Image (cartoon, rainbow, N blue to C red):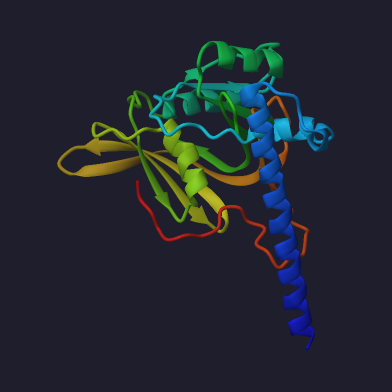
Amino acid sequence: MINKLRKKREYLLKKEEEYKNKEIENKKMRLQSHLDDTSKLSYDLRKEGKGLLDELIYDYKEEEIILYPKILVTTSKKPSSKLLEFSKHMSLIFNGLFFMRGRCTKEELSNIMHKNGYTSLILIYENKGTPSSLTISNFPFGNTFKFSIHGYNRCKTVNLGEHCHLVCDRINSELKDLFGKMLPKNSKSRRVLSLSNVNDKIGFRHYIIVKNKRVELKQDLMIDLKLYEIRKGTFEQEGEIVWIYKPFVNSGKSNIYNKVEDSDVE
């Protein structure tokens, strides 16, 4: 009896949420129509107009066109030598440009990204001299993904080469796209970046392809990434939260964004 009541309540809540979402989408379509023909807003839209306009901007879907990635890698202000070394190496892995931030504010950094046509920003922070978190922000419209860094281990390697294969195992499609856009496919790649779901962390492993008598993989960088937040918009905007990790919330729903899917290789 209790199970039936619970299921009925869940069903009604789901239907109510679907109705609200449908109503919001309808209002967005009407607002877009007003924007297109530059007509006055309907009376019932005036109160919610600003909020709906923000959602229209942040919900902008990038056109399915191939953009060659242009990546900027930088750090928090006053970085340690270890953070500088790690950040410069990450710029080599993603074939990006390392930018010495200095006193540059978030807004100034965002302006640099927009003016120079960068497609992704990788911003790395540290805790007590050790790389501790990594933010990836897609430009010009977002979203922004924030990861914590665990188990940093690197072998010193030089001459990484320009292109890199991306191999994904049990990683969901949105995170695959996030890294895939930064590492386009190329048949002449001399490196491999492996992303695998290990105990709900992303095992980030970078290898160099060594061709002697037989092909071998030489390990270059090994870290674990744990996604803890996704926001709409670019990193300086602090936009609406899409998803956030809540380790102490007891819920029937999964609290892990990177849900396990069938193995996939790209």
